[in-house]
Image (cartoon, rainbow, N blue to C red; front, top):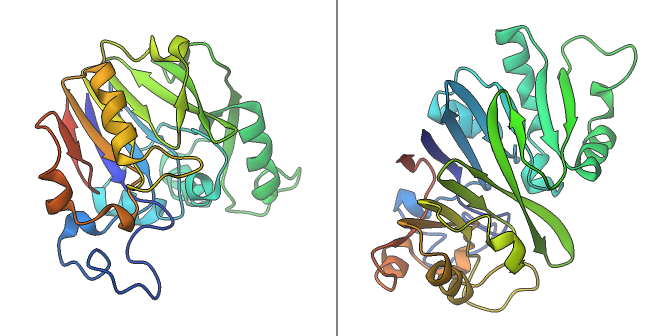
Length: 253
């Protein structure tokens, strides 16, 4: 299984318009964070979790020539806005793109990309098939996904576990019951927005505390704001089993 972090940032990430902080001026490629997304190559399948506004740029950068399905964590624009660009895969693969998500998420996609669901569709619009999922294990093109129900302030968001890998973005609360699904994970990617308290994301301190409970072999933080600081400086503060994620990071399981 190969995991590629397509994006490790947030809409308040870098470069931030009008900002002249050290992170926004940094020449370190690890400080150039596109919106959060991840690509899985597993069991011969190519699957993306979330299609943010930078989706096209991310898949071109990584040379992802085939995409079998898209799975959505939640409906916020920084996780869905790039969906239109699956049309290139429709053309290349000559098939609909399967989309998996909560009913509420799929309904919002139908509203925001209504032209893709019209009875008489305009030629060339995205062609997709919707698969509603709930908080029970489900299969994506034969690959088993275990959803993990968390809260992004008051908004329910799904994290996902696939084999020994768990992906948890956009959250600041996880129940004990849902945490049980995460234990035993070898590799964890986890939300860590900034140092200051936030209404809907884990701070760096809160994320580290959760990692200490879960104790995976290695954790990478994602959804990183420019407010967190420079990659090279923040990593000095972290134990060796916790690293900052960066765009293009590849993890072999």
